[in-house]
Each structure stands twice: as structure tokens, then as C-alpha cells.
Image (cartoon, rainbow, N blue to C red; front, side):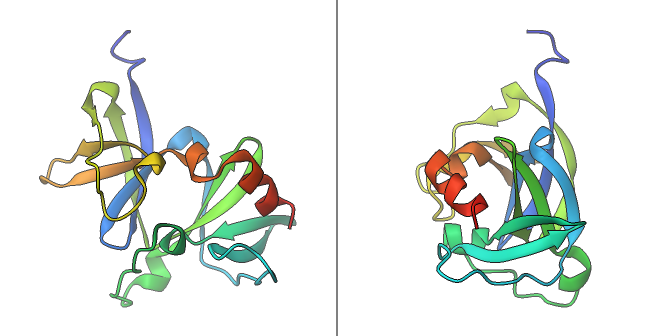
Length: 158
């Protein structure tokens, strides 16, 4: 595998106390927080829907899905929080984030297997862990495993 082929980019964001990343090829766009309309009888982690330029997009709260707390510091929350609109199997789904971080380039060889227990979220959702320059780590999410096909269809059919 050529060096360039083994590199890809991740859009990174903060969720609770951790930094997560998703493949930039799965990200449609990043939008500021806007009003989310609740959906009756939706799964517990579906916050509701938004109307984004005439397109109805379901919004998922990964805090609820992963059972983690939101960032407590609200000083910059309105400025930095928002939604990442993902394209999963041709369906657009928004996820709520606490803070957008940045786009980083990662090499395949930098991805390590995740520890068994990582922040309480299921390891089935984690594609890998990447060490960062400051000694921390970045959790790479596998968005296709966040929602199984039946679940995905249930969410987008609202």
C-alpha cells in the first residue's frame, strides 16, 4: 500500500470529555445548533428532526446513545456546538456534538485497537484509537456500526 493511500482525514469533535473522529468522506456538512423538533415515540437517543434547506434530517444525541455527560462549560457552547450531518448508506443523519475540533490527517498504521472499556461506550462502535501529539487519544467511530440497517431505516422513516 502506498504511503498516500494509507492516509485519510478525520473530522474531530468533542463529546463529553473525549475527542472523537469520523471519516471526512462520511461527513456531508457541519451546521450550527438550531431548533430540533421532537418526534413522538422515537427511540430514546433520537432528539428529533431539523429542516435543513428543505430537507428533513433526523438528529441523534450520541450523549444518550453512549450514556455520557455533555460538557459542563457552557461559556462557548452556542458558538462551538452544532450538528455533524453524516451520510450513512445514502441517508442523512445529524449527530449532536459539544464542540467541533478540527480535521486531522491520519495514517492507517497510527490506528490502534481500542481498550476493552473506553468511556463506557460499546467497543463495537469504535474503529480504533489514535494517539495525539499532546499525549491524549482520539477515538475513531465506525458510523456504520452505530446504527444497524433496521435501526437506520426506523430512524429515517420518521
